[in-house]
Length: 258
Ligand code: YXS
Image (cartoon, protein in one colour):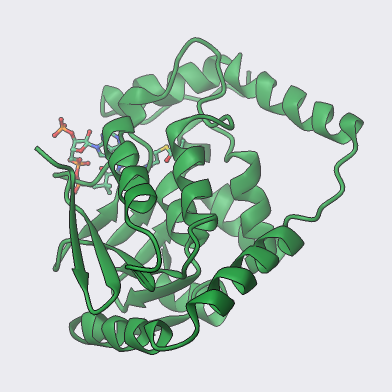
């Protein structure tokens, strides 16, 4: 059974997460999303819209915790499904709009924020919860946050690791707009139609230009190695094992900082 729904209406591809109960980003779901973006491209598609089912209480619960490796390996390296999916969104040769209804958790925040525009319903929340699981948010996701939000807001989201309203993210310029939930689909469809009526060539070129320029961060090998060693410290830790174990056992984790 497919874990997404796919429909094209007037050059706009509507990609719906449909993996109950909480659209956890399993490898199967992420591979289907990447497949939809790889198989359906311009010139047939002028805009892609990523959404959950109408009325969703949870847009996506983030990375499927049951698939996080527990053998001390970083689960979010270059070729892992979430990183591959985010890159497929960022390099898709047309604008991708996230239409967000319900709560967004962990790696799903990164997926949504990797889209070119984000329109959220007024009950939507975003929660970056890796600290509650003993996991460090991945490197590219952290860089993407630095591109769109100021440091204090990023630290609040990552350290407090609790849901933040879409209105707050809009105020901080992290997402484009918050609209009443019953208007969300109409507003998103109108925006997509506007975009679809403009030059697809300019969209493709400008999107790639912005991606290349925004990633132009010189990182010395020493800086890279320092960051990798910090991440390795986490994945080798007991806290990492405890975070996943506690989630699966439905209890509060007991972190000891090692
Ligand atoms: O008990 P059953 O079998 O029915 O399963 C429950 C949950 O265990 C399951 N579930 C998940 N399974 C795998 N991965 C998940 N992320 C996940 N989230 C939930 O779905 C069934 C229904 O969940 P339940 O009973 O909690 O539903 P609810 O409506 O009361 O609450 C929905 C949520 C989303 C608020 C709640 O499930 C929740 O807080 N989930 C964890 C959200 C989270 O912290 N996600 C971050 C995952 S780690 C990640 O994304 C990256 C590694 S990172 O951290 O770096 O961003």
